Image (cartoon, rainbow over all chains, first blue to last red; front, top):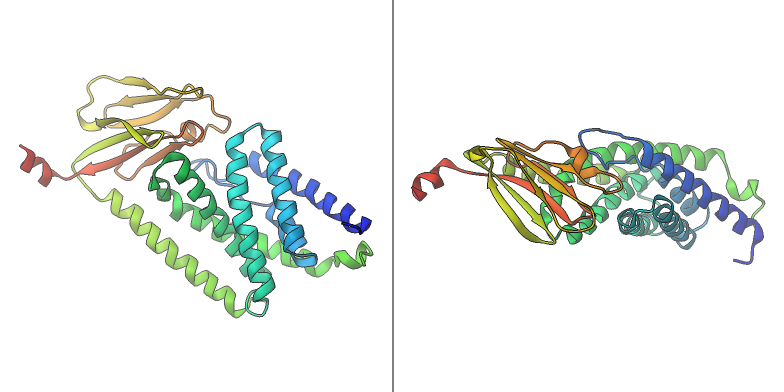
Length: 171
Length: 124
């Protein structure tokens, strides 16, 4: 990354995402279904995807997941974070790059949230050696739809209000 | 603000909720005896008929997470573990067919399924 301003911005975004995912891990959304999170760190992935590209978004996601795994001292959260994060970033990048005509940021965020959930369910199924984990799927899908919509709404407002590239004088 | 594809995404999500909801609902519909299955590392460790449990019992699972499962008449749960997020323990008691709790770090889960009365009469 030759552009120093861009480097600084990406670094800022990674630290922001890290804080958001640490907050996220402290919030108990539904006590009956522990482990279900809002996914606020996805706002950062979407912003980076919107203003830069899939490479930068993937980098932010992977570094965020690895650091969250290290900070929480939980190897399982690393596996879950990476499986969900990589899949959802790939899905969102595909939609955003290939079909921007058809999908708004809200649709992209929705899809990202659901793909993230499925990535985690698949990882959990592998770890448990059973597809019973998919009993969680209906709840995850409902929560993912609500949170994905909310995150998409916030992200699309942020992307409209702050033109990051102009503000940071990148290129 | 919303575009055409967004509605398609919504539709797909609704269909998936219906499909997986049915999968879950279907599992909860079997009446009769409630059978709890405890599995670890992809293998069944113990199968318990919850309706015939007489005294409460604790099972300790092998591994570094010190997972303990409590079985009482009609219900079962992860009562203790030293896992970081305690998701299995926080899930609480399971008592209905289709109920499910997992302790992913220990690679263990508990599932309750029902066996219909019809099958029982055939067995006897």
